[in-house]
Image 1 (cartoon, helix red, strand yellow):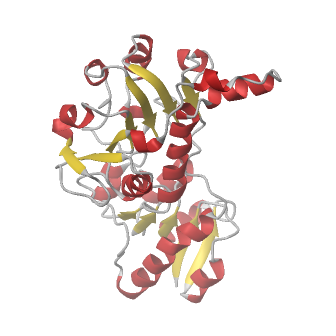
Image 2: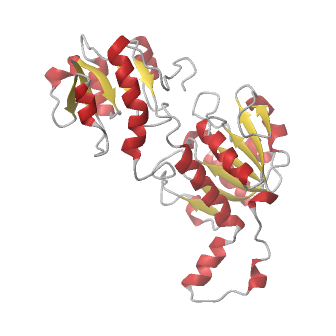
Image 3: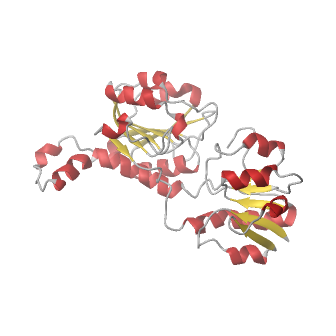
Length: 317
């Protein structure tokens, strides 16, 4: 019998299947300080209680399964020192995030801001006023991050006959990209792009990757989208790039500071679409998490290993 601390509330999680494997389940409500040292597995992370389980004297924690793709918010140094296996749910967000990115792009390309404003005023806009509307097959995209989400987005874009350029750490080839570049060679990747998308994990190398130097290299680029990590973007530099027309539009789901402060200048910009870190949301998240967690749990119960989505603790993703 192994003890699992469940730190997420989702009715679709198959708790019966966990118990059939010999798992005793604790929740945030049921666990007591006397139980901390007995927890071997954590599903989810809540700082207050998770830190106590991680650092308790004579603790037993062997494996942490997150319900996120990014793991930059975790105390990775401590987890590494204590030899705790960390795995994420990378891949389950590919469909909702990539489809949301297409929504962002089409919102601007099909002149939805103008359509919605006219609709709110009960005003029938003449067709001639939508002369700037265009379509996906006329665009070139540079996607920073060629993993599950980036690859799925590129696949969808290729179905619309858009050109896809990928940027990753080494420049290695990736599925559904017409071309790829290394992060250090990003200038060549963005030269002729209409849309730039950040889906990179947050590491020391990608923190403020999109800074003043990056934005100053652009020339009236149509759209910048961030569905990766908020701290990858220097917010001040982004606002300056929008004001200086280095960028025509931005669609932002993540921010350096969340919630985005109500007095932030981005709220006032008509050429900026802001969403509240929701692009990964989908109705059946629990089922999606279990497609990774259950196979991992079965293997862990057999031999203590985790075959799916184990984090490289050196790279941080």
